[in-house]
Length: 176
Image (cartoon, rainbow, N blue to C red; front, side, top):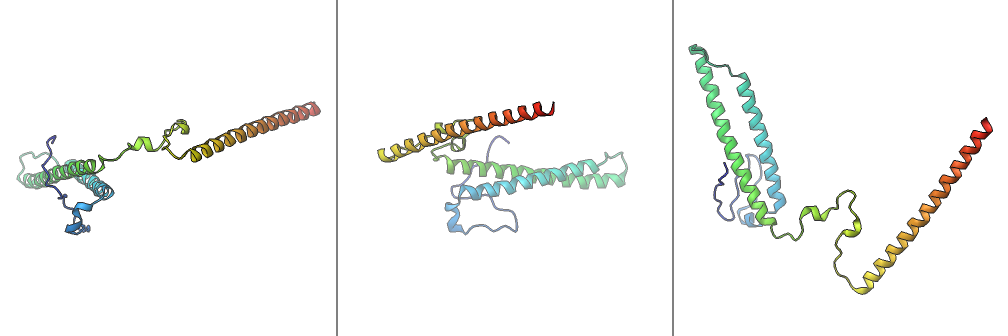
């Protein structure tokens, strides 16, 4: 299934029955979010079909030459073939949705990993767009104030820690 089915521009795979499809004029204005939602539903359909295939194969017994079970075997085999055919179609649909979504989002300037910093990553490494010198100066002043306040809080916490240490030591001496 490595080869994908060629897609005509502006066409999407059909949605599942019961879903609303956008009007024909809006097909070119479909957002990647809508495509991802359709893709999510397609993945759910794939999982459901796969579970049905496993249920059929689990319930199927090999035919032992008995004509009665042979007919049941043929029926289940036909159902299994149909499920596999539908599964192949769903995978093709998912591939088309993926390719279309990648085409639509290829013009994004940043990768999603660049938008959210990793845990432990210095937030100062986040890229800042060029601003006016006054805004940059104000930002530097605010950052300096935050650093000073952090230092002051660290000193207060150290003093509190030492005070609690002294109180605990005095209480221990009093009990002895």
